[in-house]
Figure 1 (cartoon, rainbow, N blue to C red):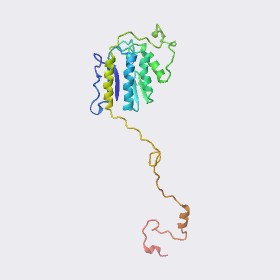
Figure 2 (cartoon, rainbow, N blue to C red):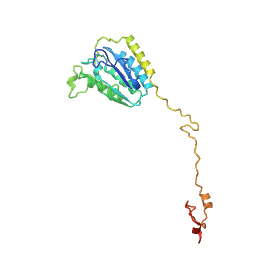
Figure 3 (spheres, one colour):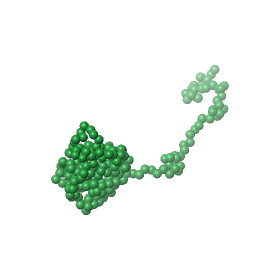
Figure 4 (cartoon, rainbow, N blue to C red):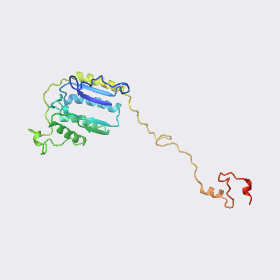
Length: 239
């Protein structure tokens, strides 16, 4: 299953409509949430968490590949969203909360000084260290991060063109699509009763009885081919 939250409209590559849900056996396994310019932290959280939460509940992936493109940050040269570092990383933190093996990748990001900010902070979030210092330590590239020299960057005052009504309508539409996804089968309940997986019924097995074997053994009796499963002629028994 793929899930994408992205800028949609007159924007490359022009795909990812909410109705693009997959085809044939893949139907309902492509989830697309098209968004408009100016997406902010609060709006993004209001749609990301419900949709991803339903995916994790319904599809229950064994592993997640999380692509964290930094072009959705405020101030990106090509991106059109208005997310802060904390708003962006909130998505990472939410996926991490499910304790599913996750491969985290970078992605887009076209304002040079903001990309390392994003991935530095999100690496900290993945390690459970959200409260890292905002002041940047001195390094060889320190001048790139002026004039404030801080980890977190301010967001702009651009208008959010994603109305509450539009976001709610699209969210409900996607949740309906996810309802048609075949749910993951539940695990077998272990009750502890006989013939359960934990307590299978015992199997009768023949156990060697040394005392019985000793009684049956006659050291004075000649072992014949018949004892060994071999056919013998009567003349072979003549002394």
